[in-house]
Amino acid sequence: MASSENLLTIRNLHTGFRIKDTYYNAVDDISINLNKNEILAIVGESGCGKSTLATSILGLHVANNTKVTGEILYKDLNLAGLSEDKFNDIRGNDIGMIFQDPLSALNPLMRIGEQISESLVYHTKFTKEQRAERVLELLNQVGIPNPARVANQFPHQLSGGMRQRVMIAIAIACKPAIIVADEPTTALDVTIQAQILDLLKELQAETKSGIILITHDLGVVAEVADRVAVMYAGQIIEEAPVEELFNNPKHPYTRSLLNSIPQMNSENEKLQVIKGLVPSLKNLPRQGCRFSSRIPWLAADTHEEDPVLHEVSPGHLVRCTCWKHFDFEGAEGGQLR
Ligand SMILES: Nc1ncnc2c1ncn2[C@@H]1O[C@H](COP(=O)(O)OP(=O)(O)OP(=O)(O)O)[C@@H](O)[C@H]1O
Image 1 (cartoon, protein in one colour):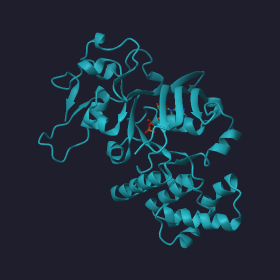
Image 2 (cartoon, rainbow, N blue to C red; image 1 turned 45 degrees about the vertical axis):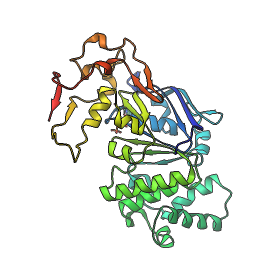
Image 3 (cartoon, rainbow, N blue to C red; image 1 turned 90 degrees about the vertical axis):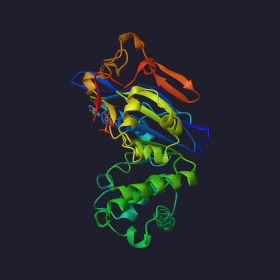
Image 4 (cartoon, rainbow, N blue to C red; image 1 turned 135 degrees about the vertical axis):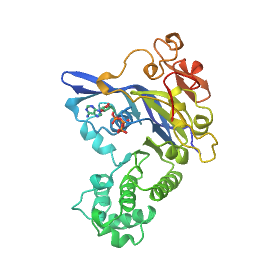
């Protein structure tokens, strides 16, 4: 069960990428908290800014092309604008990370054991023997059979699922308070995906860490998340505890995302979804309701001039007022497929 002890506070975060001489915000005024002992899912279509949020928290941007402003408060530090030196102390130690593609995140020329050991060398005073012992303990903890053998192997000798387990072992090696997992199961087939999600859940329950899980897959969200933030065009457009979001979605975008999941037991085979894509970074609407062009059948005055998040029930926030007027039914532009 999630606790309300706050681990990370994000306030008015903006992350802009430079294109020629102008910065365009891919994350545009995001405020959200991560609590201890919870899995917070960030969900949305490709291009909505999920990974940019993750890389902002991890300080993984090229400084001369990126501008990060606002607050990412961890303990008494603001991670937005922190120096690379200070970030090196925090990444891997306080904040662990898991990425989509373990093959490109792992060093192909280093044995698994050495790669897991690296962050222990950097962040702990363990002796060589203690590190070797911890490596085996970690491999065991992430469910890798025969840890001693695997520690001596190279990444290409392992399956995709095993490599992702190794990435998770690296992420938790220093017992971080926070883990940022960006599409950790997207590259895996469905059965392995389920195993990795189970593992993440188990580890989270054991360590009481807070996990930010970035995904486009609502099935993954339903499986593991405690709380969900739905992003569209650089903003959070809806945020709620997971059951509330699935049972009582408000924003048209959330409803469309949920509607796009086929239900096994549904008698109605037709899915109503909203046409269109997240606009490119340069073409993101910066004023008014960013979703209005996707739902042109709603009158202009159903949108707020400057949409903000409204709390519609405890912990359930929705941006703009257009949701009150939205319906798929008979709507021009609503797509039946
Ligand atoms: N380094 C960069 N320079 C310029 N634009 C970028 C950069 N990184 C991301 N973008 C743009 O910022 C926007 C948000 O991208 P981001 O990768 O954060 O979205 P996402 O929701 O994670 O999508 P995906 O699931 O495809 O990774 C997109 O329009 C993307 O093209």
